[in-house]
Length: 199
Image (cartoon, rainbow, N blue to C red; front, side, top):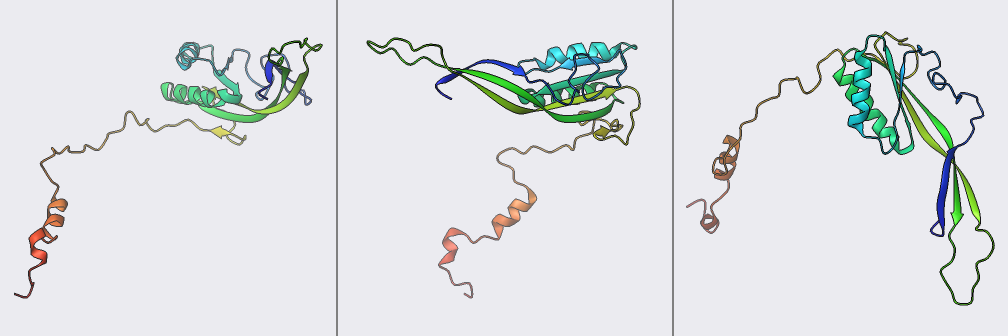
């Protein structure tokens, strides 16, 4: 592909009809009209997404939020959902994974300048159909059906930031632990290896 450059990338039309144009279509078709849909892109800033999501979920009218991303944005989608779950306790989660068809159009690069060569007609184009993973995470203040696939109940235990940590004592370089001193004593001294132990 070094002789081609990507011209455009577009989502291929879905054959099963679940990719309609409305906001409530997709993996969560039965959402309430007040649900917030956050489309996470590869270049999205997590702090911007979370600032908007936190402010939206603080409003009493907003009962659910959906984070969705595809391709390289799937890890950022999971990160946003997990951080929001820690900030707002008691959120129910449903995760849906599917694949989207993306059509990439590539165009051939013109050959390097050569003397006496005239450009040949239009550049050749290449169309590639790729299936990329797509992830949608629904976080809801209201209880969801625990029998549906991808359901996770709210985490009632405190997060790791609020748990007590075991204190560890720091030693200076000159100090040794009790186990280290006995190990050093059991080793023979450098000059003692030539001596007879029975003498």
